[in-house]
Amino acid sequence: MPEILIDVLQATAWPMTPPKPYSSFHLLLTAAGLSFAFLSARFLGRRGNGCQKKAIRILFACGMLLALMEAYKQCFLYYLNGFRYNWWYFPFQLCSTPMYLCLLLPLAKKESTRTILASFLQDFGILGAVFALAFPPGFLYPYWTLTLHGFFWHFLLFFIGLFCGFSGLSAQGNRDWMAEIPLFLACCLIALFINTVTGPQANADMFYISPYHPSVQPVFHQISLALGIFPGILVYLAAILLGSRTVHEIMKKVVHSA
Image (cartoon, rainbow, N blue to C red; front, top):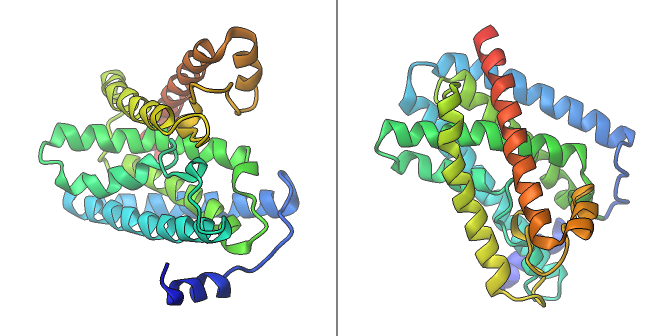
């Protein structure tokens, strides 16, 4: 790792006592961040409604910002781990997929493909953002930069999902939600492939569907212990689909009332 990069990481390694979940820090920052994301998405979405190129440029810019943030995080964690890579932090969780999809969106030539990608960003992106902020221990680090990275990352996912709805890029019909399912399952297969080929020692847990240990997610950990790892995975993925459908129905009402 270049020395100048190490100097940057050392200079930004500001220690902090990790905030507790549901502390005033967590609740106030979450409320402020989600409110700002909602207002920004509604304002920019209304201005960009009817102009797909402008909306796609905004989403691509969000993807670039996410990519830069992720690059910093990966370098920081690699540095903290003694220059050894920890597969636990490989960026392919449900909350990582918007980064890739926002960057791929300008390459989608067919409008139907762009609609599926935007609808996925809306339904699964908002779901991932809300649940991560509701259960935040995974990104409450003893460093300011990493902790704020986790909060701002999920605020941006919330903004992206809402913006897709307000700008008209996403679709709100029942068939439109069903068209997202193959993309979700494809992401799950990629995640399971990464978890499997890296082996049990790597501790990769993309999408939290490792074949080597029960789910670490609240509630679903107990389900995995009771039913077994793979039945637990199926229940977990079914819950994500149900959650995305719920977000889809809520966004239908929010967009129509905006």
